[in-house]
Length: 400
Image (cartoon, rainbow, N blue to C red; front, side, top):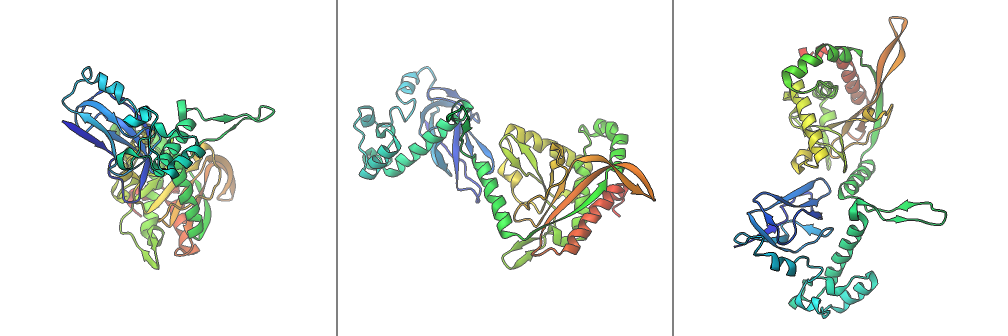
């Protein structure tokens, strides 16, 4: 029986993706749920598994092609064996080699517009699988082939194409990944559509550092995860959002939407770029729950396993540039949220306490907010609340 392999149903906000690479070739045996191909969207990389065990007898879309939701990608014969299908594999190994009987003979029928575009782009119409009537090559087929060729050329062997002008001054030109392009689009939209203002404060990290140093070994032994600093910031941020609900709100047209829940986005770096997975109902999570969730998301991000559901939603975000050494920054709001907290590097500095100069581990905090709905008063007081809670972390345990 022939079983079809289709593109998964994309989330509502995603319209298309780019086929990255096939893990199997025509003629290979596949197991049920074995990953066949990766598809990159503007949010995540989706793994497409085999719906049934069998032999991959046909691949219809090649690496680098743009695909839509539920598009047919390949076919699996559930009754064939790899050995028996070898001759067929040789005949149908790749559509670009033998897209149609006529193409193999150099007699592909291309529509005038397609032929003109093929001449301009250097695409061989005989290597293009026509989607028109009787296998005719359409202009859209040539456009898709040209785009696929460009992506393959840029990413072949994971090495970008280099241009070497006179004097051996090397330049490299590579296409943006879908994730990088989407991040760029959202950041520009955020700056264009929000009235972003940033307020700053500084925090003495010694109380949190002392608490962590005192209990980190017992904490790890009890919960199986290391005690970091982010969980304290999440707890303090949630307390501030409860005290000043407008910081947790968002704009929808002419309405302000107050969220009665606290879904906190944590910015995490990944090989593909920045991702912001969500801690759902963070107000109901313990310190250990938060640390475990962050570790899990970090591993997923590293392995490219972050799911669309992990990144959807969020009412407030926290980003930590201090892990890379940043001393101060103005973080950009992640729409449709209205505020974001920026953490930075902790450095020993001379400060005045009770009239005396002492050395303390200090961190600058930055709260960027949408001034359309959040006044400076609420923003400043929310940041002061976070500062006060972290400088006396016992208050987080007592909820005061």
